[in-house]
Length: 331
Image (cartoon, rainbow, N blue to C red; front, side, top):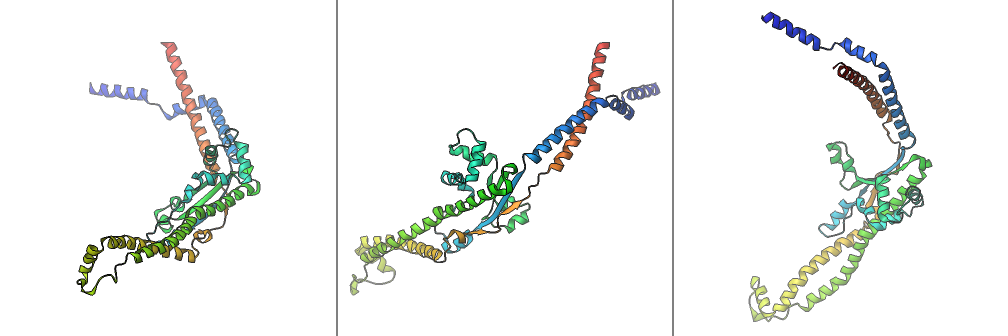
């Protein structure tokens, strides 16, 4: 009895098994659909790669630079100054408009954009969507943690990309980069170094006034010799006899010390000419033109593999449909 059951089970599995010969027969039977689907896939792949080569190739230009915040901090210490990030430059409408005064960029923009040309947000979206100009921290671009540690947090890369068809001899991309670098210098001058100059002028006016207030409220010489002891008791005695003057001195002196320290820090910075953009922005390289890596060979290979897979898949789908229709007709 058990032997019969085993034999039945074996027969059942044999009937359900699909041999490699069956698969090969299905494939050969539907070889025509395989060829058609594969050829269509290859044509689509070639058209896509051709489009990338002809129409989507960019001229890429970049420059690396480091902002000399480290040296400024060594002189400024805890003194406040507006620390600016170059990623914020084109978020300011004023500097974005200055960039679009570049004739090559303006021409490119007017050729591509037909509506709301004067809208500042349209201009910003045009740069972003086409990735025409981008600024990134070099640390963010580092490929390994070890490489990241070697880079300054104040090091940046600005990249300009322009479609190769619209940028013969890289004239457009190089022009945009030069305009941006001019704006970069102007941005730090107006937003950081002009502030320090104005602050220095303010302190030069304020310090003599504070010094005079200290002298006017001075209580030295007003105390008779027999008026009391010295040391820690003097301050309490002064506060008792001259409460207003002592209170003023406490206020003015702390402010005077703070202002004097800030003034000396800013003065040293200016004397060393660290307030000049050319000494603050340290270019790590000249403007570099890059031959863009398109990855078209990889895309072509992936397209070929997918086309073959789709062709094989199509043969079995066709066989399944034919079998289903045949069974349905028999029933």
